[in-house]
Image (tube, rainbow, N blue to C red; front, side):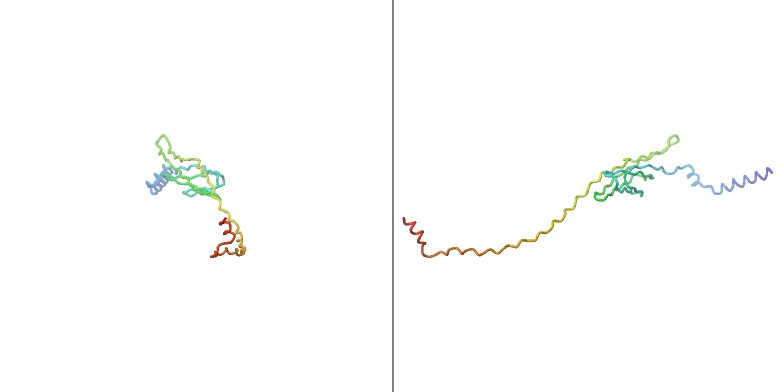
Length: 158
C-alpha cells in the first residue's frame, strides 16, 4: 500500500512539473496592478467627468482606476459651461522586500472650475422703416433780378 501511495504522489508531482514554466512562476510573485480611488469634483456640480483612460461619472463622484505610467487627463463637460480639462500626474514608487510599491495620483481630488459660456445676444425685433412724407416743394428762392429791389434801394440812398 505504501508503494501505491508513493507512486501516486510521484505521478502527481511530475504532472505538475510538466505544466510549470518560468512565466507562471513569475506571475505567482507579481501583484496585480494597484488601483487608486480618484475623487472627481466640479464647480458647479453635475458635470460629466470623463478620464482619458476610460471611466467617467457625474460630479461629485469617486471612481476606482488603475493609473497608467506618466499620467492622464480628466475632461469636464456641462451644458451652458465651457469644457475644462485637468491633467493628472501619476508617480509610482517600486517596493522592495520590506515595503510595498506605492502609486500616488496628483491632484486627488481632481477639481475643475467651469466657466459659463457667453450668452448669445438676442436678436432685436426689426422695426418697420418709416416712410418719409413728401415735403412740399419750398418756394423757389427769389430769382436774382437785374433791377435792384426798390425797397433796398431807398434804404441805401438815405
